[in-house]
Amino acid sequence: MRYVGASVSGVLRAPVESVWDLVADPTRHPEIAGSGEVRAVTVPGGRMGPGVVFESQQRMRGLSYVTANRVVIWEPPYRIAWRVGFTFAPGVAQIWMFSLAPDASGTRIENGVALPYALPNVFPFDLLHREIARREVSVIRPTFTRLASVLGTSPPAELVEQLEAPAALTALLPSPWLQGGLWVGLGAVVAGLLLRLRRALPR
Image (cartoon, rainbow, N blue to C red):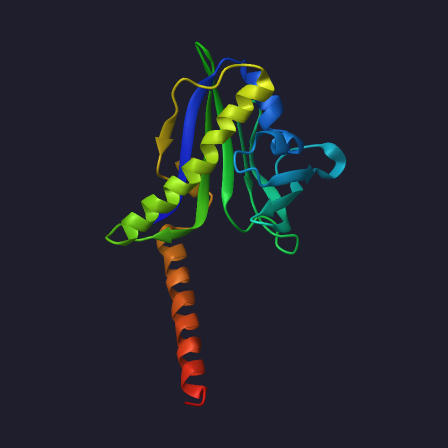
């Protein structure tokens, strides 16, 4: 059993401090988010830090909604992570992270995500794991082009993809066995309810 997620890393020709000022300011995320779904962000009091909850106006496939995101890692100027949630339940869903490290050419950036569910390491679940991870990678990759554009530098010549959730993020989640069991249990309950409903309907 393992959590689903992915990460992409690459080197930008920019100092760590400049990259940090951009990625650690959620109000700038509409400029850099590769998904294109982030439209506007509000940070209460305008100050970031551990435990801060910021709201993000999102739009996906024509649907507009608001997320409430809790900062779960805050290590300036090297690492920030926030857990997505809802206005009525902040920070209960996936966790996103930017991790920065000085490099001879500038700054090595890792952008990763851990989704809040786990899948078994066996066929066919492993194929589903990889497919979901590839979709996350396709969302993350454009972020590097956008970062480079805002920072006034060229995009990374090479990006490294990992089809696994970053360990720093899965460490913040319950045991994948517990989480996987919860999802299986929920699926069983839903299946049971649907079966009972089907039997109750007139034939």
